[in-house]
Image (cartoon, rainbow, N blue to C red; front, side):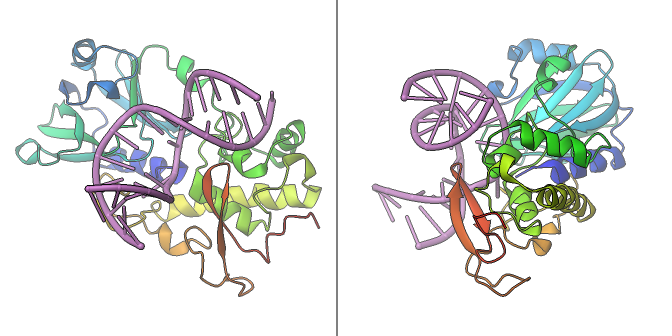
Length: 279
DNA sequence: GTCTATGTTTGCGG
DNA sequence: TCCGCAAACATAGA
């Protein structure tokens, strides 16, 4: 489920774990299709001896700034990083890539579903240029968001999930933001009133900031779900108001929350707070 | 055992 | 442009 807050958490924990400044001495690839843009042997050869200068985030991509190249990692559904000492490495059957670091530690990449993709490239812009605005940046102003919505005739939920407009939102935080702003997921972007745009703009920032502050959302109790690099779980699942809470009362009005499908995605709303017809 | 659902993204066809 | 659908995969739960 890594969305913006989860990816941001991973970036922070990688930095805190002290991998910045270390050199990748060797790489092993257990699932070659993980590397989107290079043949397996070339990837392993090319990443070796490069130093990790800096780690950042763009949308849901982790961005590793290396000596010569940029390593872009998209975790998709189940990708995760684990850091351990070389002696303990090798326990997981879902390990897809292993990076040996110059301090004797190993950075393992696990991915149950195998949907995650890595790009090792000197031209990261080619991959990142399709992404829209960063929702926690100053660029994402109310005016920018309003124009974005008014320029398109789209259903609001699929629109918010589309990374080319806003980068980093996923199913969980979109449902939460729409509930907070009291907007039905089937509403059209162009139909939103000035006040609704203001509420939604504010709600998007709020749910993401809260997610980051709470170390991300970890659903379920299984390893398949999101865990941070340190193995610690996020805490934001306790703060969710609608996501996967169908059948429970709305914390705002008491009405029973329901689940529906919008844009082929499971969608959770309060039928009382989020009316289909604009007010 | 079988069927359905699952957090993401891309590409196809209408 | 937008929308629905299927696919890339594996696993949990009914």
